[in-house]
Image 1 (cartoon, helix red, strand yellow):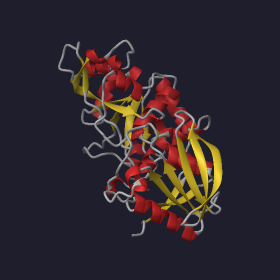
Image 2: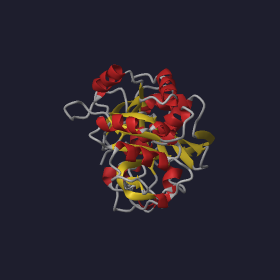
Image 3: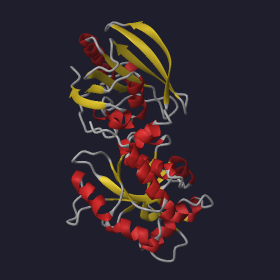
Length: 361
């Protein structure tokens, strides 16, 4: 696990404050992608040209959830854990087609102008907004959230213009290619984990509120209650054995599914996954099930398709699950999941995934 670099995040924020560009990578891994970004308030036609040149013309605008609502921009993605693209926009009053760097710069400036409302924009054009989750990287460890957080940390308006970094042959730049690109142009390089680490110095989204012994059919657990400091939502961690500071602690992060967990619906595998996870942890004598309650963040979930397995996917909403694990003193974990995948940003929470363990049938 690479160590998050708070100094890199601070250097990036300083560059943004001065109107400069920053390369924002999803991680330090060789396969990580990254974006060239700047604070949206500095998106001049010349700056938009630079962004467009690095991504075959595609320029994205990262906005807060609140601003997207004001502009009437609904995210296309149904799953709140995923990145949130909306319909492209253009400022209605631009004289051209909206495709020029000048037109796109005016659209970006209009989108971050609080006096502008939804009627000022057409939902078609050449600026592609992305919706950041309200709590930023402490909720979801994504580049959209990191870009908005960095702009805010820089003292700028919470919005960022960015484009995907591409190689000269048109392929997407990864890992060392990103580092070389940043070095060549003199841009600071920062990762999502660096931004998380900087925010965690002074902020946290969860606090421990209660605990109680919980004997179950699976074995003896301690139920630890956590509360989100911003929303008041409550979540539960079921802890078996001594987990603080342990290596390779077995963990299941489970998103509430009322249909499966409570009513044992056969339309999903949620109840089975939860029961098998509790069995596996009890058999090992050590581990944690983090049960994330939906609360008022969306409609009651009556079923969840297997491909949306929360053992890994819910960690992409992770801020909350990751912070709960960090509060419990975990640093090295194995995730119970039938859908192993790369998880970025966890090192910002002091967590390292050492492996995935399939959930038994």
